[in-house]
Amino acid sequence: MKEDFLPINGTDYIELYVGNAKQSAHFYKTAYGFQSLAYKGLETGSKDRVSYVLKQDKITLVLTTPLVEGGEINAHISKHGDGVKVIALWVDDATKSWEETTKRGAKSYQKPLVSEDSNGQVVTSGIYTYGETIHLFVERKDYKGVFLPGFQKWESHYNPKEVGLKFVDHMVGNVGWGEMNTWVEFYEKVMGFSQLVSFDDKDISTEYTALMSKVMSNGNGRIKFPINEPAEGRKKSQIEEYIDFYNGAGVQHIAVATDNIIETVHELKSRGVEFLYVPTTYYDDLLDRVGPIEEDLEPLKELGILIDRDDEGYLLQLFTKPVVDRPTMFFEIIQRKGAKSFGKGNFKALFEAIEREQERRGTL
Ligand code: FE2
Image (cartoon, rainbow, N blue to C red; front, side):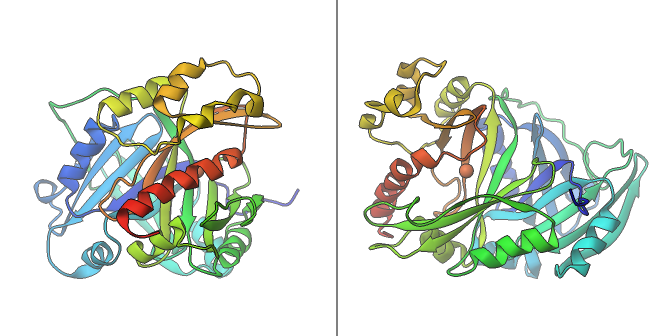
């Protein structure tokens, strides 16, 4: 086996550029059960931007809003709406990660940069991926601070409890017509990933719309990035709708894992999270399709949770409606019971559910 030139320990954090970080933070606490972790803003000496950091088990979200007019963050929000800017990857050596990827053709976003405070030192570096999205390599060494240098602990009197979200299972990128293989090659050549699976428009199509997808994974399998591209159909696919509203390629969904999807989805729903629904006929022949499962069918049916099986086990999953104003980014809640796949058996039912939403938006 060839040497992994880009060893990655896991997802470090996900940063979204948003129009109003304070209110977004409240949403992710209230609706999704994230906990207040860290803050930077005027009170900490950050004069041009404010960032709220939230955490739930191994998932860290950073929400950033500019405090002044002009500049890169405002331009990002104006062009894309609220969306993911940074997929930060936790590495042991951020300098080597930057060198290995840029020498293989990555466009640099940030040269290795040492930042420190009384809690220690962190090295970060960054490269561009699809669209204006970036991968930041984060080397924490023995950093003892709450998040990164420049941040203070965020104490809040308002702490709704967690909903059981554990870690980032995968993050999906939507790219434009004919671009999927370019980005598959980028992850192969520049980042040393390999392709796990591939779906073509015959796997992923309904009567009206189609898309293609390839799943890229790093050496130890902790990072999985499916890449979607639209395919020709009779009507406009959800990927095209995304590309239109995001004005280019970007992160489509963040899949977060739970150990108990029934409890997690029940809790999320009661807090106002909106999910996509498939018709109840989906459950009529479900057990014939997926075989025996440990869960009772009734609560799954009631919550609209989807089930799929591969040769290693099964998985349960459910998708939210977009969490921002434009029909762009959403979340997937996933519980794996052995299965390592992505719910191929649910694609059709799911895309028909999305088409019903597109119909309402007039974008099908
Ligand atoms: Fe997914």
